[in-house]
Length: 524
Image (cartoon, rainbow, N blue to C red; front, side, top):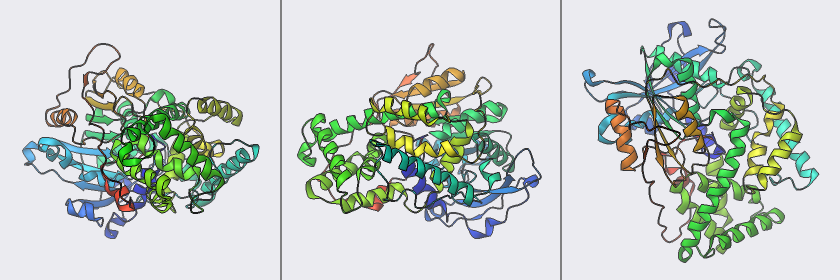
């Protein structure tokens, strides 16, 4: 889950050319085979990956009917076959994130524990290189947007009209059948189709953010097919999806204030104020100023918020964003801010956003009364003024979505033997309470907590306490001993907050450089 559409859209855009053309013709779904061939993405090529397509039913109620093609990548195990531990299927979140590059994640696991698995990534139906790929209005996230907070009836009406227009564009530019079959349960059935195509009785699964919800639903529907499962930053199944988004708003605002405090601690570098309140005042002044006079004619309050929100997701981006804010405020350098907005936002490619809505709007019926949305979001705005309305308008096309909504799966993990969960306790995209709830539903799960950490869905990431436990689990199945009650089973200190250096100009390459940050609005 997430409002990290920026990472999602960018990842989906990168995915568009990952699979080599010869693999494009898939075998019939009944044969459940993948025609493996070379990859074209340099990262996958360097990792020795192979790529292909798997045909699966568009509608699993009609298995002999229309098919869609899932783009799949694989990096095979590096140990003797006698030590092979099976397939590790992965998902980065979103919904809407491309997962092909996750096939390269095995070497990140310490002690070569990832070497015993075939790491398999895939673009879920509608995403990236999978065919067909959803798109509604590629320029929807462009600069010509009204400010998020609807202080006037005109702003509210403009956003409602835009949201309705986007939903109508989705109906016009995509098949109704595809939009009707984009639910989490459809992707979970695709995951099981991948398992069958790979000839395995069971899957191992590593899911991030929204990918943890895929893991929850897979474990509910196919518990006998789960061997081991790692869930990083877990979705709360009780709030799917309206309530979870409101919970995010409060958590994102809490984290941005923590970042303001960190910026203030390093006023010698950033010169934006020596207290959290001072930095907050500077940001509020910039938001107000940009609402009347967008910097460079393009950087308004929406673009400011869209970029600084990344600080609520990842401490790894704190220095990049601190540099950018310092240059923007102290030097008027809006060009660098524009670079970051475009890098995070994926301008000109709405695939990730379209898939996000197609899943969330149909997994469960959202409130159909705008009056309820309006009341709930203004109440939340009183506690969380930075990101509440940004998130509301991001989801508002669900009011008008052209496909019928279903009912969410009642998550029940009692049949799943083994799950390792990881979460930082101030994770904003998937608040920590979700991890505690899912742990209570999966008696075979153990939870690693990182008290005070604010980052989302980034393991393994160099935290030896966490990463070594992941390695032990993948190598031997060993889990931390489960404690009684609604609590974590073991705690690890989060990675220390970054230390800034002299500000330098951010670049699109720097914004994209950290391939360790996974995709997903609930990702990420």
